[in-house]
Amino acid sequence: MTTGTDLLALSPVMPVVVIDDVGDAVPTARALLAGGIGVIELTLRTPVALAAIERVAADVPDIVVGAGTVTSPEQAKQAAGAGAKFLVTPGCTDSVLDAAFATGLPFLPGAATVSEAMRLAERGVSALKFFPAEASGGAAFLKSIAGPLPQLQFCPTGGITASSAPSYLALPNVGCIGGSWLTPAKLLAAKDFAAVEKLAAEAAALR
Image (cartoon, rainbow, N blue to C red; front, side, top):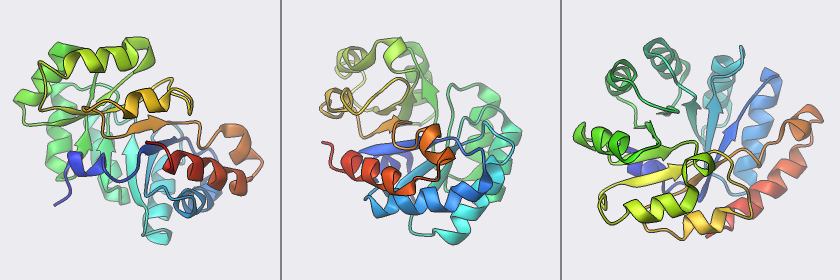
């Protein structure tokens, strides 16, 4: 069974993707895969997000598609029903955590403080999303908590760029990073999937 920790090993960068036009979902996923990125987080921020997950799951089976910005128990259930292979939450309440466990899917619950991370560890979670990364202390914060919380691995997301990514990836408690720069809205609006593939290839080479 895939675990949260396994998710962190799929690619150095997990693309955080907002789809406004459901027709962009499959070509975006194919462009990322062609560039060497094996995972995609489709955020539940638009009305077409669940349909986008369904299409990618059906038409691009070689990429691991997940649902991001899961903020309610109902969204966790809906994402699982749409074919998501994992879930990502920006933060974590008890009800969302319980719902995520209930889906049986691997998931990355969000944490931004030491106490939140410890609480999730008590529930048996060892792979977390650190969000919002830059606003919450960035790479320096994660470096400082690696000592007291060595059992935890993170996917920092929020404000990270291609230039700041290496400082995170160099940390022993970072498995991958989440980034939205691979699929900027302007490229998707222009249907410039060749440019997305190029950004994906650059991201896949990071370490």
